Each structure stands twice: as structure tokens, then as C-alpha cells.
Length: 155
Length: 76
Image (cartoon, rainbow over all chains, first blue to last red; front, side):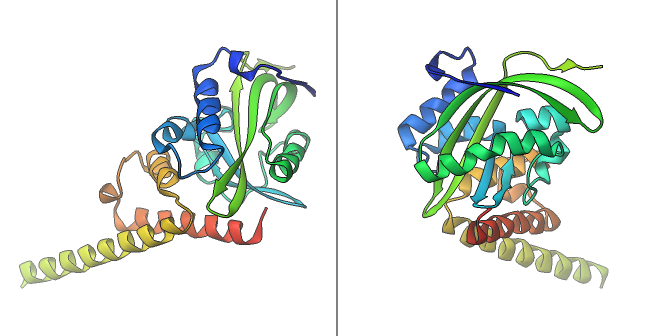
């Protein structure tokens, strides 16, 4: 897996990514603020409850990259699951959730990694923005991932 | 007689729907979940408002909200 920090995430050429950055900039992650802008990006987001021993889905948007890879049905029933079925992929990426929660500071990265989708292996490359979300006093993490390239089937 | 039974069934269903809608409203206010609820029912049921859900779908939604609250209570 290759991960590179984005120094200028606002320059990512993706409208949903920029709308998410704008919502976070104006709300600082407070779920109750700027709800119209939030609802534009929610179907693309994943929301996670984060503890010291891992994280679980609160919500997985049907139009997220997880939905693209594993299907919308996986997403609508994802609440309570620890992540995508490829546990090595999940573990490598969700380590950041704890630090984002603890520091209340978003991270933006470009990621390239292999992923197993129900027995078929792909190489995926995507931008991701991991940011703190507050539901009143409950702190969670939001993740927006957007493909920068189409997934490539690996033989 | 059949009409009377149909009317009573309809009234019971209406009470159940009202009751579940009120419960959803109360549950969602704890965590300001209205945007998430709107997105969830659009994702899962393809509808835009609570008024379009049937009783079974409302129960599913209540389960989703209660699952959220439980995860929030316990942390990840």
C-alpha cells in the first residue's frame, strides 16, 4: 500500500471532494451545521465510531467507493461492521481514524493499494479525506474516498 | 362488517405509523441525526420523507437509529 499526504487537497479535481472540504471548513465537522451542503455529500461518505481497539461503521453511503466495490447492499447493512471484508486493507487504513479523533485534525491522502473484492483482486487508487465529526458530544470520524483512477483487475 | 374491520385495521396502522414517526423524531433529536436519516431512507428505500415509509420500514429505521445510539454509547 502506498499513501501520500496531499498538501493541497483543495486542488483535487473532484467536485464531491471539494464540496466535502467546504462543508468541513464551514462546520468544523458539527453534524448539525450546514445540513444542505452535508446532505449533498452524505451518500458518498462513511461514518465510523472509533475506540482504542478499532472502529465500526455507523453509516456507509450507498454511493461511496465501498458501495462501488462491494455493492450498495453491503453499505445499507454495514452499521456495526468493523470494515470492508478485506481485513488487511481495512486495518491499514483505519489506523488513522484514532489519530484523527484524538487530534481533531483531518488528513488528506492519495492512496494506491490492492484490494480483495469477494475473491477478485483489484488495484485501486483514490483520494481520501478523513475528518472528525461531532454529533452533539459524540465524536466520530467521516471518510470520503474518491477514485482517482478506475480500479484495475489484477490477475 | 368487512368495511368496519378494514376501517379498524386502517386506524390501527395509522396509530402505529404515527407512533413510530414520533419515536423516530425523538430518537433522532438526541444526536441531531435528521440529515443522516433522510440519506439512509433514500439509500435504502428510495424515498425522501418519513411519511412515505410503511410500518416495517419505520421499524428498520428505528433499528438503524438505535444501533447508532448503541455504538455512540460504547465507542468503536
